[in-house]
Length: 134
Image (tube, rainbow, N blue to C red):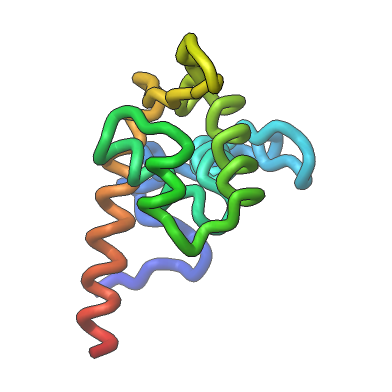
């Protein structure tokens, strides 16, 4: 029986989808990430962000009021920040609805829909963890 060397990934992981990022891809905070895992984490960074994305995956689109009602413990300041960041990241688009008072509808983009397996995996892992702790 052979043992894996500590600190060395199995051969199947070294060239696959979980391959190590080259050192040049790992940048200090504040710089635009280049490692795929780091890019995903930067997009979903911040408490509540994955839950806001989950709401969009459930609905496809939503107004600020609908999101606020769906996530009642989320402050207005944090919700506004998350919507701005997700818009900047290309996960959602902001559409102004004509009329008075002005209204805005946020719509999930194709990049946002591509996050569904990520959020689903987070849900499944969290469910299993919650069940194991009970």
